[in-house]
Amino acid sequence: DQQVKQNSPSLSVQEGRISILNCDYTNSMFDYFLWYKKYPAEGPTFLISISSIKDKNEDGRFTVFLNKSAKHLSLHIVPSQPGDSAVYFCAAKIPGNTGKLIFGQGTTLQVKP
Amino acid sequence: NAGVMQNPRHLVRRRGQEARLRCSPMKGHSHVYWYRQLPEEGLKFMVYLQKENIIDESGMPKERFSAEFPKEGPSILRIQQVVRGDSAAYFCASSPGLDSPLHFGNGTRLTVT
Image 1 (tube, one colour):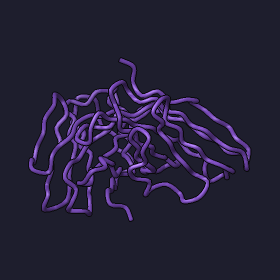
Image 2 (image 1 turned 90 degrees about the vertical axis):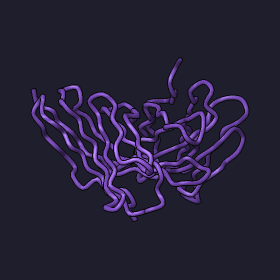
Image 3 (image 1 turned 180 degrees about the vertical axis):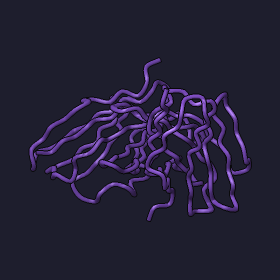
Image 4 (image 1 turned 30 degrees about the vertical axis):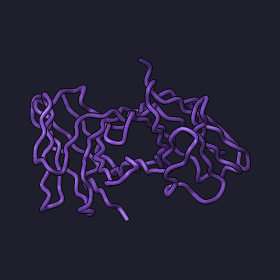
């Protein structure tokens, strides 16, 4: 039962262009969403988050959009840089007293110079 | 301020042996989570602990797996009588509170031969 889905296993983008990574979820009870970035042989690093009461959050080159009616969120990176090449995980938090996250399968982003 | 420290980074065990994975959370973090990543998959929640207490172990297999977070010392994930299917990357994460993003360690890659 995959509650958080990243349907694109990989994405290739030219340096300087926009990267758009997508994520869909099934549980309408999720109240907080996060994006993590992971390099090989390292742990995931927190990138940006958004509360379910918002539809957009921006931090420098990174913007996350949330469409609750469609149960869809996306991460925009602009302009993309070669150092952005990594695996990106979407995660959702279940409301309650555990703080645990449900992760998508990940999307591998390659930014070509 | 050191990040989440996991050791060992790599662990090789033969079938039937025991594996012990250690995690020291970031300073000031009292919430510890263990996740497992199988090849080509996302991170799957295993267990959530606070000092001396298991809060949520809904993602942990009922047999052979156990976790602890003692008052003093690191959190330990213990796998008894390992099988080949236990081969995976095991990530520990910590946070200072339920509303904070999780900070991950670099993981322990377990290989069962």
